[in-house]
Length: 164
Image (tube, rainbow, N blue to C red; front, side, top):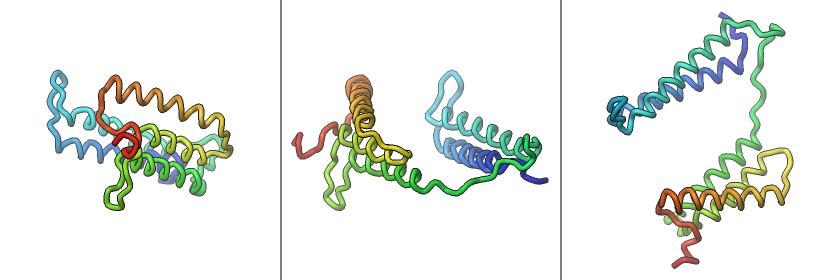
């Protein structure tokens, strides 16, 4: 059986693998019932749905002929966006928690969001400083309102050397 669409085939496999991993990982927690859901209920259901969706996409990529008959080929890796998106998330995590082993203090939520926004925006084709700054300000205000004011989560908002 020939693969008729490489993009669909590999994305379907990815969905299936991630779905099975979620469902399997959820079995380590109490699942509960529909009326009294445990901590493993949502990841289990999500994992099952993702695995089913992945299986359907993979199956479709093997049986449904594409319009041009050649199928969608997988292109080369987009290294620049991959690097900047991963780097932005790593910097955000380090900003929130710091890294005590090298004496890097926690820089807080606001700094983390600004760093994440500015680093991730380099993944695109164009960079507009004004737009990125406005986005960072809006994300910072909304994150502060959601996580600190409404959910009352306890993590640093500002750099530890400013609040100590």
